[in-house]
Amino acid sequence: MIGYVIKRLLWFIPVLLVILTLLFLLLQVVPGDPIRAAFGGENPLDEQQVRALRAELGLDRPLYIRYVSWLWGVLHFDLGISIYSGTTVKKQLVTRIPVTVGLVAFALFITLIFSIPFGTLAGYYHDRWPDWILRTISILFIGLPHFWLAAIAIMLLMTFSGWSLSVEYVTLFTQPIKALKQLALPAFIMALRPISIATRMIRSSLIEVLEEDYIRTARAKGVTEGLLTRRHALPNSIIPVVTVYGLEGIVLVGASVIIETIFGIPGIGSLVVEAANNRDFYVLQGSILVLLSYALLLNLVIDLLYGWLDPRIRYGR
Image (cartoon, rainbow, N blue to C red; front, side, top):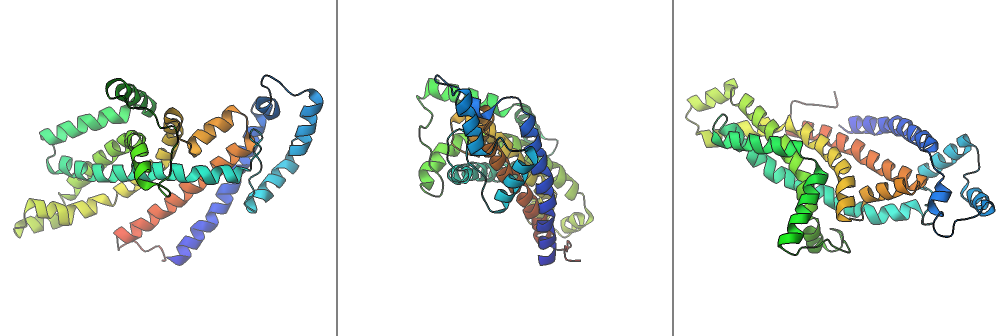
């Protein structure tokens, strides 16, 4: 197992290198000057000031030198300086990562506590009215986009309950109770799609497992249907769904970009939008590097969970 983990971690290096290289090159061909985007307000800089600032930030150097310099900085955990704010990218990410981590973790937790019982109920009562209702609701929420649900929820709450968006967000690591209250609605909206997908997957897997020979044998021995489902069928039907949870955990990071922007949450998602609007290349590159690392590590965790849930899987062989 340790050897397998080491091999996977080593594979991260070429994957990160290729994607970061493509990202760097793509950002260089994006139209717009980052200096003029950052300092082109009411009192724009003149040409001489623009040239001086470009020289100070190293933007006047050849492309390959900038690439090697940036990559060398990444290896030393130096992601550069924000063109727009003048602060280091690492400092901005340190303040924003806990917010996004809390939001995505909360959404995944909501997904787990709702999808498993809903999927079990739909599979146990398949082709009966609980199954029909749950399948209809799941199809509905799979099709509805996050931004539309967020906008409708904000509008309804503001209209009927006087609810308002939070001005200052806290993290789960500093003020957990307050953070849970602030993130409850955004996390729930983010979790609606994963809940629907996982519910349908658990239902299909449970129906398939209930037709296995060992289940028929347990029934013949007099095991009740409830105990049979909880102890034998459900644990085995969850194993294929682990992949769905892993993929949706990555999708939730993409959804956080939209949700954080709508709710004004100061996480990495909103930072990506701000950096793209301001042509702040170093911030955008650093943010995407963090999100990409998260996706790779989550895939590794899902693979390791397979070995833990299913003893037949041995990665060391």
